[in-house]
Length: 481
Image (tube, helix red, strand yellow):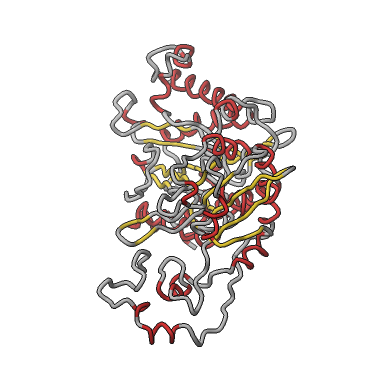
């Protein structure tokens, strides 16, 4: 591991090499020029320019500043991997840490300037002395000009930002603000609720380039599910949930950046635990295995898909009973996703199916109507989570949008969302019969709203109990061959 905060190496007891003149001079010579081209995905520059135009129209005459952020510290001097703020990336396509995009107002729009940390090249002591930016620590660093060419935007050094922002203390600020690197001109500035809201609401409608990224993420996720299913025998043999988690995360890292969120692998009585991200339990024959997984593409767009698989390839009668009700709700929800329908409509129809089914099983202490009433909601004991959300650069995308633009708004062409009903009968819940305790089932698909209907991007994974059994059995057989 390398140390981000110690500029001279891993061991604080070592002398500061940057203070040894002979060494410093020697380190400034004899270096060829490596390939410093930024890793930029095709199409990102054009898409980002269009995104800036859309935001510019909402802030005529006003300065806008969005920060990419810095990697949080995991422990001591070791940091997590860096991932740029979603709004920043949407506007720039840039993956640089501690970078900033500023939109300066002019007649008819804005001038956009991207600020990135100045790279440390041979001759600069930070070349070997900075664990944050030095090339000997982090690898080849693109020049300002190379960033500008790749992203088709004016790029300046990060140190110029403070001078450029003088007089713009009323700027709208968003992104991941780091108080340690905040320019003096913005000291005391708070994140702009309006800017955060506008960024969320603009990102609700995906353009063609974004939809391509989401399709890729979903397709790679489908392959990831297959890879996990083939490893179920190894999990049963002793690898447990960790083995399956590791399988998917290796697949995600190979085909994208990694998982788009904390992978959930819940087997048996862990399946009803909504955020079972510990993934440290056993996988036993006869369990129902809940897998909530998504690949994040290299452009940071993520899939979010859930299936519940029978470990042996065949559901028990109780598992199938629960799965069939969830499937019925899921199909009702999918049918309700279409342009013009309210976002809340698919939620309502799925809850009606769930409440009626639970009533038929004598699990509700009240009528279906009372359970569905605003003051009732008894059925929510077994499904306390939401059943859908926008999807994009964030797994729970557009989260800062106003209620009237999100839950209270009609669906529109270009929106991408999840539909994910489930039933979660915890092993210690004495309101359900013993045969249902410890069963958790969720079905989650990623849906693109089109001009006249909707498209299930994850449709290659079956949703019926019969289909899931056949799909799982086929992959278990493939694992044996």
